[in-house]
Length: 354
Image (cartoon, rainbow, N blue to C red; front, side):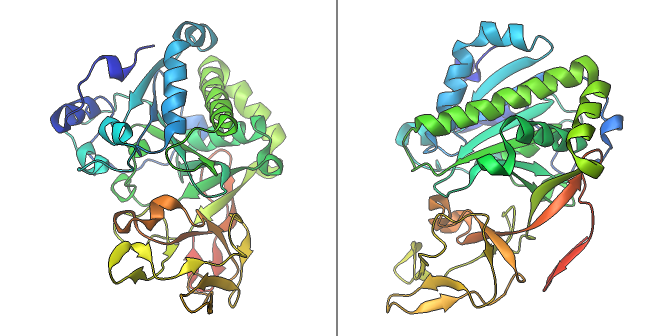
């Protein structure tokens, strides 16, 4: 296993050049194939840390992977595993961003994928537990998420799957969309710019389970699918479905908050104490949402339907106007184990999804 850190200097132009290894033309359409149709062998896997420079969990994990290269090759002989420090300047400065937008550097030429799977490692200040984030219609990653959930204990142990529904890769402005398959791992709560042993271990557990799945997929995908069918009744895997994004550049819908007139990165209201650390809990119209400077409680208006589930509650990264301020919104759903698509149409208020 080789580390990209050993092969590239990371000014803006060399980052663009490096990303040609994992990129495609962003207008390339999503192909939603069934798992039985996803028969190609997985070879090139890139594990990415430091996409946000002040999220140290992923950086630690890729450094540990580099040190374990020999044992990884023995455990997963069919995979070529590389690591990538995605945002080295921001990492060195302990900042979320550096002066250019990473996702804007992902637009590159070429008609074929050179990386099979990107695994993007993140931490969050919110109490998200272990959250696996995948795109609807990627049947292989849907099956992978189902496998990782089993290995990591499921919702009983704080492991959940969040599925985004987007019509094209261009509408998925994240690093994990820059390969044939993308898989994002979020672990929290972790304060920005620190390491937590438990969060690192939880991330490493999820990465190991994912690599194990890919190895088993290469060895005997028919048997792997049979085992997953036995674990999930009616081929239905529980997940959360993100609300549709309403602002450009966002992955999902958010309940936004007003910003201070003197500083766009400072909220004019704060998250109500009843919601703090309660990610993936239900909220209904009229429930406490924010508190203003006068101490007045501002209730949820039902803007995204009712009931809904909140996620990334009081996430530090979402204090930045450039990231899109607010609290994420989702609903409970199920996806089909074989197609990677949501099982049924759900209508919650104005949140109508098919």
